[in-house]
Length: 516
Image (cartoon, rainbow, N blue to C red; front, side, top):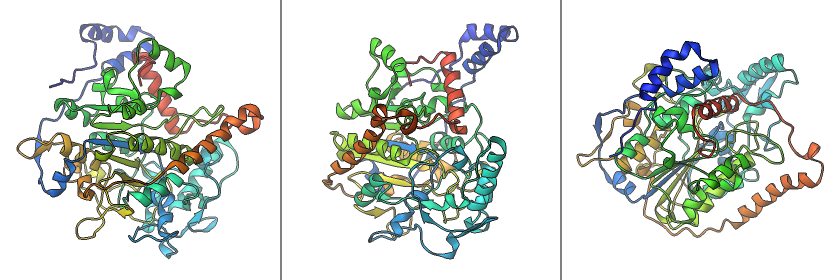
């Protein structure tokens, strides 16, 4: 059994703490980070009903989670109910009156967007707790009015024109999201996957990893939290897992037990895209393989979590691929396709489940009101806004949506990820899983949508050609006029700013550049 040790520095840390008032501010910050108390691992266990759905889950050997940023279901997948013909009834966009918003500037309704990338941060809608409350007012009809107010406040501070408030009711379709359209055709869409918190990015990512937040619906900056995470139980059960990223892994910012050490559990997603500063030290020290290497070499761990690239430099190409506005959603499509292709060509594919979802809605319109949520904390008694979610596996029916045996939609939220992983890998002989709180205990798990394995033969080579063409447009900028073709350096979004600050703190405290 693997023990989780404190990241403090023992007697040296105690001595530094005494000397702290005499030291420079930067060193004081490092000491505070190094001496963050590691919260204890929960010791309780809770009984679960081991039915056929749990038994089907045992056929899955590899669970892969890819969580992107800040888009709603209607914004990304709502078009499925408007275009094409599907046998199932996806609850997406329509021409119903309840999908109309009003603001001071007029009436706004869902419309197809004419661009895959927004212009500047002013077009990044508000999504903190107060914003979401306003957006959900009057049966989810406050999105445009909230965006208008949010954008006006940004313009008053930074200047520039106020964007169209109806932007948040815009949506993409198959032409914009070819990878999602392919996956929706061949695998499963979840049209009742809600974010866990009606609020910002980090509280939702906390729920996805720890089953709860740290008391707020909003982010802190830098996002350095202190909660026990589900990987602790995988370590206790000696289950192989790995966190793949480009930046320092988000898990390091959530659970101090993994803040600066356990390097064997962290890898890059694709080392071929690293900067020289990251790549060269790793090469000399024989840095471990990336996700793409593990999938190709039949060394995929039992549980994989993939962080997108959160930060963006926009020099000769798009670095960020997390889908956070104003970034180009085509970059997110490229990341999803790269992940799917690696798994589809791996030997592990027949027993793999890939979940693609988003942390929260990012202020974009969705017409389904979030229902009440069970929770130990009464401040978190409602789910957040519905987000895109797809289950990709040869063990889900083709062209399907998540329904129970009675044909009813199954409600998921991010704690469903934890519940699924614990049921698959941490179920003891008495039918119990670790107790990570009421939200996790009562969450639906993904075993409920699994069926008999099927042979999946769909050809996705046309998608590779599409993404190669998109990437070539960026490469062409090097031989044309980079001043016109490449994106101008822009103000970091709040998420990116927080991530940069947290990454800097981790590096200063001792996390080597060669480790994500």
